[in-house]
Length: 403
Image 1 (cartoon, rainbow, N blue to C red):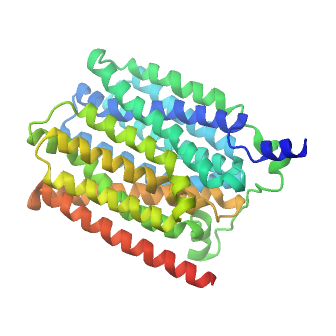
Image 2: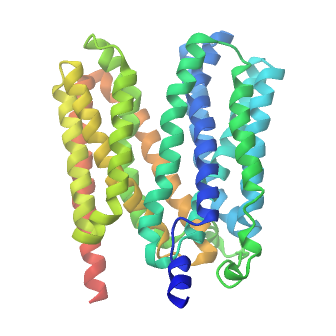
Image 3: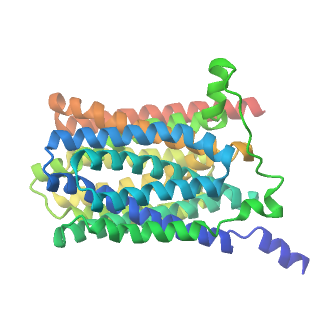
């Protein structure tokens, strides 16, 4: 009996983890459907391309700012209450799109959704870190990432299909069903009241009267700074790739981008499943090195691409590299953080990822005017190689301090 109890205590696949995974899939479907539909909806309302770009940039900036404060709010007020608040903001935005189809109101509602999405996603990642046993933490974080990946993958495909066949603001009500389901399931996540969490999660109030140091402690977790810095550089090419993939493929005469996205997502799912086992066998540093080199290979293939076959191959490599790097950097960001500061650790890491992708989209957009798409992809390879050297140097430096 004792052995059985110990096995149950260290199991990843318990009721609460599966419930949290279901929430992540439902909300991932919602956010990715809206992400896909919303620019098309703005064009439907009569917005110009430049205006759509400004709104998208403002939304991303809103998410970035909210990421930084989400960790503080989560650690202060608790996981479930902040998750429910974030989901409520997101659902209110969906209802508002249907009830008030006015340009200014639509922009404000999208910003409200940015606040809700940021708060909810940081909270769900923090919940996963709370629930996972320390013995299987790395494995569990990898599995949790699969849930959001599945939701995002099907959300984008489903959203695009629906808009192409039924272009209407009422589609947001359908999205609201998935968000509402996530809200209802979150009401069942009451683990913070359980005996096992009483000594693990103690939300701390951090005084904001200690100058810059107090502000830093309130919104950042120092144990997440290194993985956050590595992630910022890794996400930089991703922002450019997502921005330029469609026009670059069009310039090559390639159609049917759904297959390219599906290939990338399928390889990402497969690679995520292997990440923790590979890190355990070969070490985190070596596994991250492999992931970054594979991602660099994907960008090189993009730079030399002349047809759809090469683009599909590049998408596969990009998915494999991301599947290795994303979960391992996420694990590095939260595994050393105190339980009462896990929210800040997650928000620090996610804010770095958002900032890297935003800087990539913004900077490479200007660069593409002068060096073209292929030049941009070559430049992204250099950024990743620099990130690789930085990662190896910092991790070796950290290991030397422990000896």
